[in-house]
Image (cartoon, rainbow, N blue to C red; front, side, top):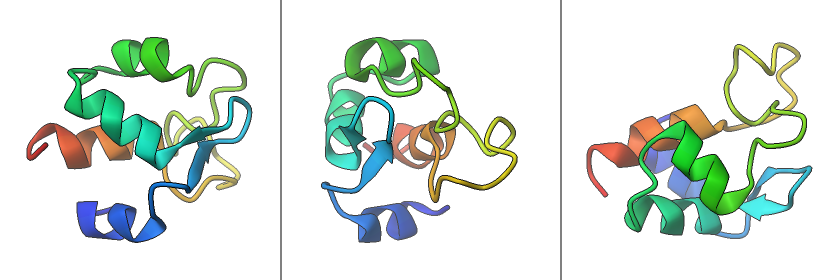
Length: 79
């Protein structure tokens, strides 16, 4: 997904169903320096239970619309 597509989801969009982590919380963590998967998971708890929200490779059934790796890639370059 592109950054523009991700932003259309809105801050309240729940990226991690297991932990209830929203896109807004993830973007805030990235703005505050969480630019690796490990740091992002540590600061938001997203992806720490079932892991499906981490990447499309893990979410092979396509249950999630957007994944942490996509968000990191979209925001890492132009915070």
